[in-house]
Length: 151
Image (cartoon, rainbow, N blue to C red; front, side, top):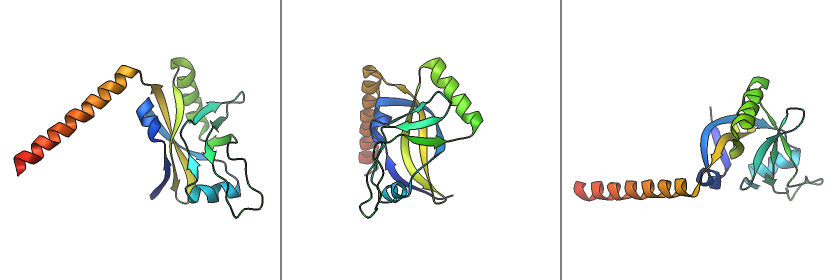
């Protein structure tokens, strides 16, 4: 299965601890799919939310206008996300019980269809971010020492 990533939400990996992820479909207009293929999609600040009917929607996801389209779409409109009913019920239960958030991690194409990798996330606190930075620094130092010993 080929997977061509169009946009990635790098800030989500920095601000949130991703507990699990799920690939979901997305309902798009014609000009939106062309914009996504061109890479005109931005996920920073976006999230997913359930409505009263139990449907899942992507909120604040920016899909830029397609310049060649006659009837363009609204770049910030909510977009419906598609998943199996059982998966939606499980996600909704986890979000309501534990105070977790659904964050779009990336937009990619799978078998020619646009998909979103949706992460079930918990917000990181400031000390968690510091710990992550310290781990990365330690790993870099160890790699540098290992590299210098090989030479």
